[in-house]
Length: 414
Image 1: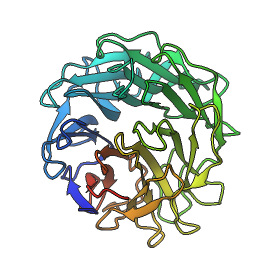
Image 2: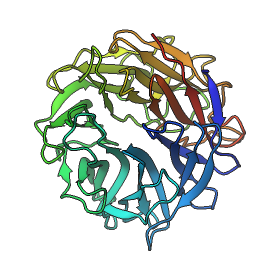
Image 3: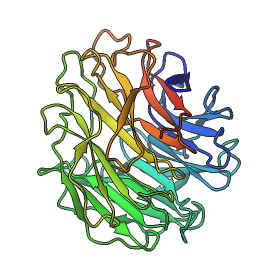
Image 4: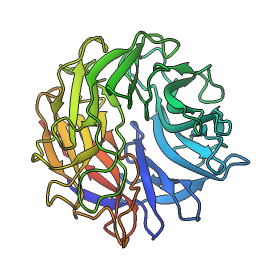
């Protein structure tokens, strides 16, 4: 079964910025999240499947008292039946605060939101969240929760932004003092975090000030401290609006990292993935490291897409059992305007990739809008479904509105 699409949401109200997690012990249990405007204000929609993505229930996560909206959700899985969701909550356009929700019953219920790091007016805005739970098979830090976010300061007064990292060692009840990953001299967008088989933690970000750079710092003590920043690659940022007639949606360049936690030939390899405009169009590039992020390979394209096509919003996950590298992305390579979703897969440590179109129908980013839309979300997502499968989620407009669709494959490639 491949190229099999499931409708996660429906209706006419926009849903975007999807993320997905899978119970590794019961892979038919899946939780997806997205910004959901069904109520008239942006909330975190939570969608739950108990049959491998064929059917989805839905609900909205409650806002903390005093907040009026939420965005930038991400979901992660932890042993045995835990799911956590982070988001950026706000009252109006100020006081952006990073919060986390936790379920210990496979997403049947979630506790009240817990504040990871508070925002304060236009002085501090914590946005663009990411979250993972350490499920490294040989990690002494099993169960640690790691949250990263874009810490914006002096937002309306010529300020900037830094990559922040927060850690919980007690299941999300309390949070250690956050760590600033990036330099105060740089401006960053959404950072990312990954862990490896033995619990090493990678913090990654891309600077938006020139020269733009993909940077990584490594923690060998479960996120208590991080080593010096290492350059993965220089980055040529993609234009905020891609140079295609009829496009108006923004495309932000984010860092994506993952590691091989399998027992295979490439166990321990770390992967960095991003979109890049160095060839005069947006393409997906990848570098890897075999020495816990000390050195990185020269970046290579993973798409095989035609020159001039636009390929963007990559996300990566590596199968923890087989080591298969799965990278999802949008592309307009079929006709230069309509969008499709592709998955690039590698079974040899990223040396070669097989790219597969997983959308059943190409779609316009503008859906039924008489004018080009300015937002289709800032990311999409993919997660491995061991052994050897995957499920990806994206914002799709085939119904005439922005809805979340999932693409599932259980094919084990060899």
